[in-house]
Image 1 (cartoon, one colour):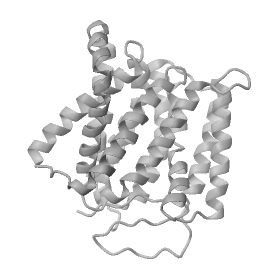
Image 2 (image 1 turned 180 degrees about the vertical axis):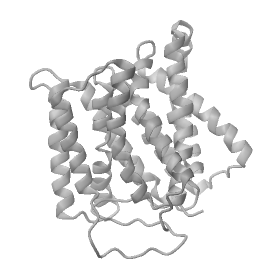
Image 3 (image 1 turned 60 degrees about the horizontal axis):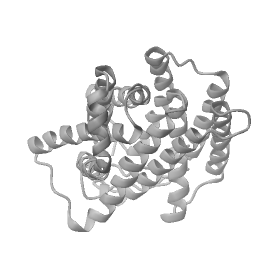
Image 4 (image 1 turned 30 degrees about the vertical axis):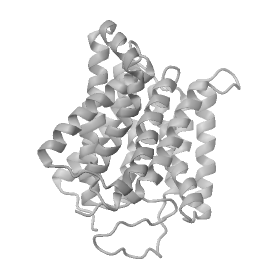
Length: 315
């Protein structure tokens, strides 16, 4: 699949990066009135309704029974665990720092793909993993007190590991469905799991100020539904490994949005730690100069170019 940087694709890339980056500041804004778990339910309840309307209009297919176990696991990891852990972590971790910690997800994906999918990681990739851990350690120390590890940092790292595992779990599903269909299935399943927090949400939504509620609704429609739809279009136009390289811009945008929206000024330690973490991720995903074999048209490439690559979507 050849990369096509037409105007619509570039717009979708930009839209996705800005929306996903803004979610970190949106979480901090929503936490002023909502419990982390209840906020996750409200956000993905809104996202589920948005995607359901889209599904009716576009006649999204129902998944096959054989794919349900993976879809359920993906929903658990990618929606329930990831977002509850991230919301809990952002009670004490700044939005920009949280975005940097989450940016380590490709590292976890590479490790799990090596262990579970039999994919090999080059020496340069392991060097990148080490560098990323050093960066994460700096951020952890900056968010904590002295040499103690902040619990919030641990929760955000749990979210990152969960997201990395989710990427590995969803690979086989993406072979049989369009990206937007997989996003819809996973979102609906994950939202159903979050319904256990419905009693708390009903109480909190009645007392929450309008601006906090609107922030959560925005996250459901924007970063939760629209961004995933835009990203699905991007994946249909280029290799997923190429598309994912743009995601390293998210922390930079997240820091900028948090600065203007929440007044969170990043510390020098967080900036240095973030630079190390992202440099490590880039090393892990660095493509070798030669040796890549072309993939057959219409088939997803699960190629390791220093790290695991997302399967490409064939339309």
